[in-house]
Image: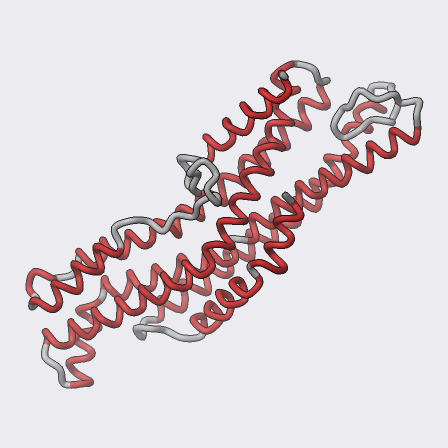
Length: 316
């Protein structure tokens, strides 16, 4: 799974990722409707995403060695041998070669688990700015009469003509952002699939000995701490992916809030067509994994399903 995620980042989705970041960089320096809030929103979203990424990376960089050394330290405090694995395995401590091999294996597993968590959080560097772009469309629609008044003054159009022109601009802007989101959607789905399957399995492995009571106090504390981290990471990613998915519906709701009832047939037709296009969220799905989609409502189901499957495998 880690190899699959690495190949996705470096080969499969490289062009998609480059495309979306090029688009975001272009939009960062311009405003579509002449409102300062547009530029402020995307700059704030990008800054927030990179702050989360920075703090998360630093946190995982500190947490990784702690997960490795806490078991030996607790053993030394208890007056036992320091030769303890990060995750207890029933191996003989007298066989040094077996111990060191097992330690390196678990060391690599813990490292890869933290790398997957960082890669999942890194998705926010694109989803948050995309969300802000949708917010820019909604801002333009909410203030469409202000834009229309400006067009009437500058271009000498009638009220009906300026409103229709502004509506067409917003619809084209919305479609442009949707196209970019759909283009990068396969990358987001692969990352989401990797996150859910990998982190869910790690959570199941950590929860099983705690629930079965086959671990000491140090193992319980380490396992609970690791479970909290995994749940928080998974919740954050699912929440952000659900937010960007629902923005498509919010655009439709903003269109309904315009004075379409006072406009002509062409305006009403455009509003109706756009609302039909925006009636469903653009869900990020887990590559057909049991129909799983990124949302706050379904991430818990993924955790439970992964634990049930692993528990069934251990029982056989």
